[in-house]
Image 1 (cartoon, rainbow, N blue to C red):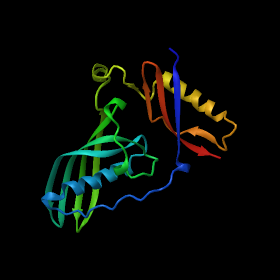
Image 2: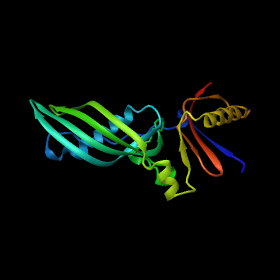
Image 3: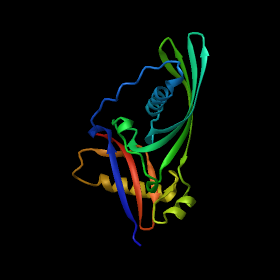
Image 4: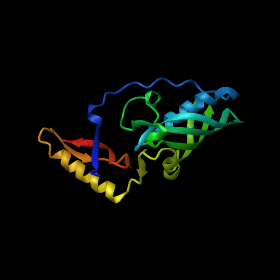
Length: 202
């Protein structure tokens, strides 16, 4: 079967900024979990400079240790990947979560936070990111669904370079497009899909 290539070009130059909602104030009370998790997800997305934004799926753990002048908070968060790339200014709360058939990705994050005198600071966070379902599990559930390929897949990257070069041959373009990163490479029975966030040089 003939392979079809789809090139999706994202340019920060054409995106309009939108304001993110304000965060709730944090305290050292037992019920601080939702507000602390909200701040943590904002922090993670602000420091996530590639790929796609995440949204909170579940707070799996929330421990509070009282210290002089405040407290130390440890959160265990279950996050889900959205369809909004990090260059998309849309608040992550408004981004659609990727469905299982679209090869959903999850992140298990441990976040350490210090709250003192009403100010909350994220001191450390670590996230373990993986597919929600493995390729083998997905084949059993949905044989026709796309399969995620590693971002360093040689055949996929070759097609990415060819697609970018072909796009730049378009004489109607006012700019030359340079590849910034490959967000995803997925393959199916009849087609290969490429999602390529780009930046523009005049």
